[in-house]
Amino acid sequence: MDAAFTAEQDEIRRTLRELLAKRSGPDGVRSAVRTSGGYDETLWRQLAQDLGLPGLALPEEYGGVGCGLAELAVACEETGRALLPSPLIATAALAAPLIAALGTEAQRTALLPRIAAGALTATLAVPGGSLATALGLTGDPTGGAWAGGGRAGGIQARPVGGAEGWRLYGEAAQVLDGHSAGLLLVAAHAGGFPRSRTLLFLVRPDTAAGIVRTRRTSLDETRPLARIELRDTEAELLGADDAVDVAGALAPAGRGLAALLAAQAVGAAASALERTVEYVKAREQFGRAIGSFQAVKHRLADLYVQVQAARSAAYYAAWDPAAGGLALAQALEALRITTAEAVQLHGGIGFTWEHEAHLYFKRAAADELLFGPVHRLRDHAAQQAGLFAPSHGQSSMASASAARGSAGKVAV
Image 1 (cartoon, rainbow, N blue to C red):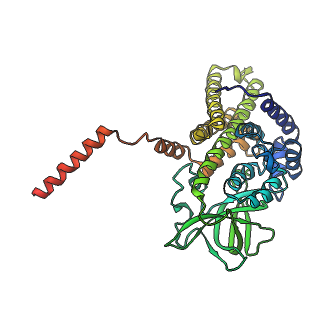
Image 2: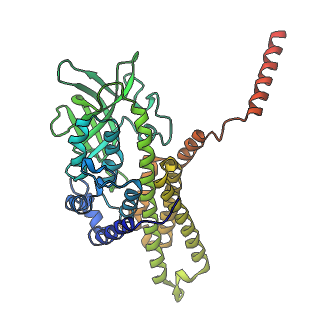
Image 3: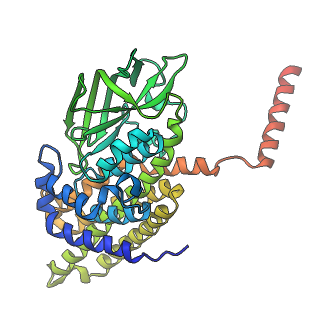
């Protein structure tokens, strides 16, 4: 494995950092999140057209750049540094991989080039607050229990005769960028309880009837959430037929998403740490900069180690997405600890809600609520790795003990 970045990856990092430094400072972030879309649409078009950001990991045959997850992770790290509010994660990390994996050739040809060009934004809508489970980050997505289990809960789908396709009924309460996305990928149950199965459907909010989208007040305004209500809404099945393996596509998409979110969290943590270091160099107390005190140096050194360890894990996950869940856990933990220390080390001004340190602190708290928490990410990764499975000797002893217990009960 060659851990060095290529010239192309370094150029992506440099170009994005320079552009976002000019266009997406703390004041720019606050202005962007207060727009109807929740992001700077002019900047998004520039990122799409000039840098090809949403199409970095898409094949060239569908209008993409033809790069891989590593290049997109480098870009996500830079957007994390600036806390850029954009539909990048929802579109390029959630929706596009699922369309590429499950869509028919006609669906891929119609949708992916528009996504790569930045003309179409998309997101994934799952019922309840089960996004992390649906993507296999904190639980097993097979079986579809996270989507309502085929009973009255979740979102239900029913086929309509003729060429009308499907109709959906239900609600998704926490949809990332759901209020502004031009395309929704909706996870819904079909077949009722006896033949229950989870499928993905394409819903076009601009033309479909019976859909209500409401932007919700979220802790982190740079990651806007929406409630999607579907009332007999027209939908198109994603894929050629209803035998597609949705769970088999959601898990790989979740691993890739985790790697990109880890890179974003590392970028945010690094930026918060750098801003804190600059502040303690300038802030004086007792006639000297507070950064010269040994206790402050030790705290900052510990944070530096945390961020660098998380960065290494995120870069490895970009190379091997199977490590995405653990990398995300480490990155979210590093971001939480770093932003909490940043607020404290900024002193009284750091506790004011308007200070930029709170932008990073709210990102840390909201991401862990939406994609974690950390202990569940680690627990699921450990379960998948079989760390808690009993050894052969332990299994034999347990079986023998159970047999002796059963024999004693029979004798009595």
